[in-house]
Image (cartoon, rainbow, N blue to C red; front, side, top):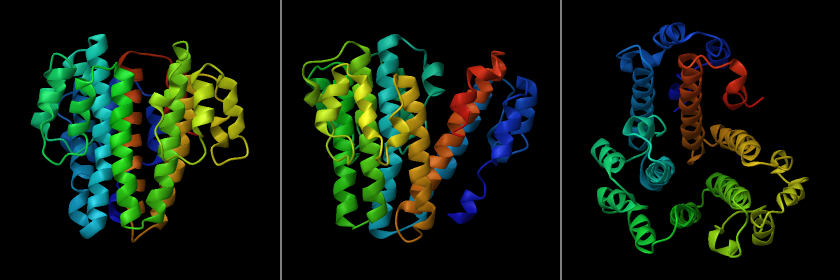
Length: 316
C-alpha cells in the first residue's frame, strides 16, 4: 500500500497543470502513470485514461489483504458504486448522454458490462434490471427503493442507509476503531448535504424520512432545522470536529468544505497499518486525484478561466 501511495501525483503537478492549455495538459498527463491508459488527445481520451487507471489501481486492492479486512476493503470500494448509482439515476432525470455520465463516474467494484448496461438503461427501472449482482450490498436496496416509487432523493437515502448500515455493522464486528470513526464523519456529511438540498428546494415537512442514522455530530434535530430552511443552524457545528463546515451557507460551500474535511480524516488512516485505514486513505486520495484531473481537463478544453475551477481543485 505504501508503494501505491508513492504513485499518487504530487501537489505540484496540479498547481502547474491548472494553467496549461489542453494540448500541454495532455502532454503533461502523458508523462505520468496515466500514460499507459491514454489513447487519443481529446477530452474523452483523458476521461477514459483517468477512469481506467482508477479502476486498475483501486480495483485490485482487495487482493492485497485477507480475512475480515478484505471484506471491509470491498465494502469501502462499494462507496464508489453508491456514488456511481446516484450519478446514473440523476443523469436519467436530466437526460445526460452516456458519454457525459461516464465522465462523472468513479472507480468502484461493478463489472464494466454491468456499469455500461446501467448507463444505457432508459430509466431507473432499467438501472435496477442492470444491477443484478447476487451479494452486492446495494442491489436489493436499489430494487426495493425504485419499486416503492419515490423521487430520486428518497432512492438516494434508501441506498445511503443500506450502505452505511452494512459498513457500520462490519466495522463493529471486526472492531476497527478507525473505520468506525471515519464512517461517523461520512454519515454526518451525507446528512448535511441532504439537509442543504432539501432546504434549497424549499424545505420538507417529513425531514426524518431523509435522515441517515450513525453520525456523531449532526443530530436529527439539527438536520430537521437545516432541511426546513434554517441553514444558519449549521453554526452549531462550531466547536466540534465539523467546525470547518459551520460557515457554509449554500450547497456549493458545504460540499467543498466537506470534501476537504473528509480527505483530511481519511488521510489519518495512513497511520493505521493493520486495519482498513491505510486502504481508506489511499482510495480517497485516488478518487480525489481523478476528480481533480477531470476538472483541470475541462477547464483547459473549454478554455475557462482558472478561477472557474481553482477552488474545487485545491483544499488549502
